Length: 403
Image (cartoon, rainbow, N blue to C red; front, side):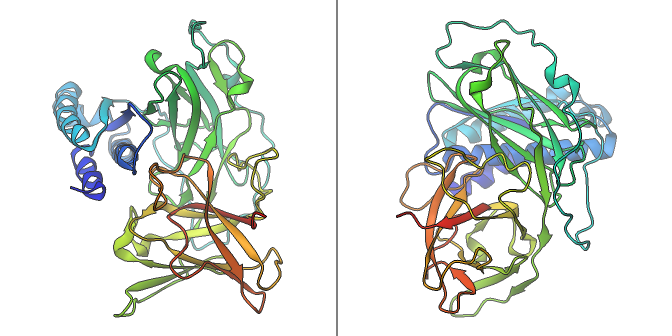
């Protein structure tokens, strides 16, 4: 059974449950990331469905309304999920409530023009600054984090209640990747993600913020572990910003010979891809939008001498993986590169993104070189070479080719 079959098996077996996925080694060939993807998808589905239909948490309302205990339902789901996890090379553990207090997810009208992003004028929610209560383990050689707090806003700087935030951390000693259950933001956009005691000694942390089934581009943020305050709380004072996207402008029917769809998106972006290679969304569901590299809340942009130069950014929603091939990419040369100039294309690691020939999937929230594109002779378009392009649909960035 291949990785794609395993992903679908796990997704089927874990539907209607929130999950946390663990692996005892860095993920290989997307196997472990499949567990994260399945767990997150199942969790989002359960949480949103239960929230809308009963106004209660997924861990409580479904069982109560059906006249069965949450424990019985969780026990059955856990057994099936563990069997699937063992076959896929990872372990699945289950939980119930997602901790949210907002019944409805934010929405927007996709027929309206995109709003102009602006920096929020609000101060961070006061709950972020409250002192922590956990005892600090001084023997941890890494970073001891018992809880992560922060807040989420939209591109207009308004708080986003009902968004979901998931924390993925690497154990300092074992290198194990643990993705915790998503937590919902409250009406102030505030979230708190507690870390179980066994996973608190860590080497890195990354956050993923989304709005399930609404076309806000998922965003990935690396927690700055250098700013610890000594009480075990990682506080993210700068707001995490979620951006609206828009549906594809057109989707060309594939030719019989090649079978490639050409998807045209906002910003003169075009993707050539095979529908059967797209894992996650269908071709008809694809959308996206350009975002300026100086727009607020782009927490994945790196700083420092080793950081890539990013002149432009593009976000896709829903996110998805492209298996067995890549999506050839072309887009408008708004940065003003010279005809024939080479342009580096970067892809942002998401839940399940790997590059052919690399043993491990891309680290979530980190830029990796996907390909080198070239400006056409007219200086109007930037296009990746034949057979090369994006290995997954999350965010892509571009800048001058490395010298």
